[in-house]
Length: 112
Image (cartoon, rainbow, N blue to C red; front, side):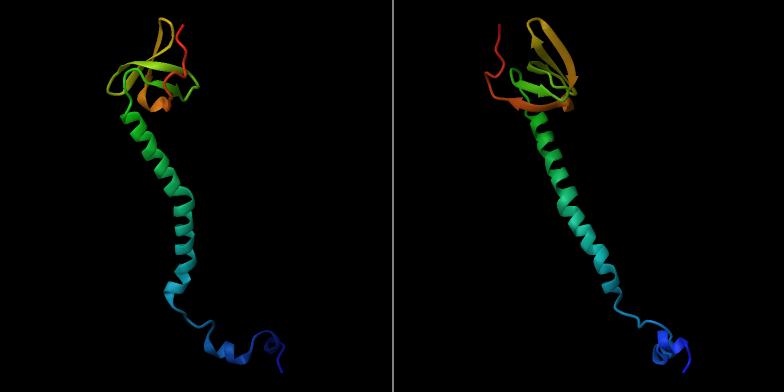
């Protein structure tokens, strides 16, 4: 008995290695990983981006909004890609539409 026979059976050595399986079975873990990645990461992110696009499209003059910088104000003017927001009496800033993160309920901001 050869020392190599203890580690590798002679029948497996004569077969030439591992038997070839179904190629689909070798891709199955990769496919499952992609499906999990899709449902846990990509799909919720796309849903949130769609909601933000809808929020920005529905902006109206007089809406009270919150910006990504944390400033709250009332919309004075709407442009194609910019919005003028009044943040205090006679103080207005011009920001990009995409910088608006939320529309606040009416009456949230008190006018002086």
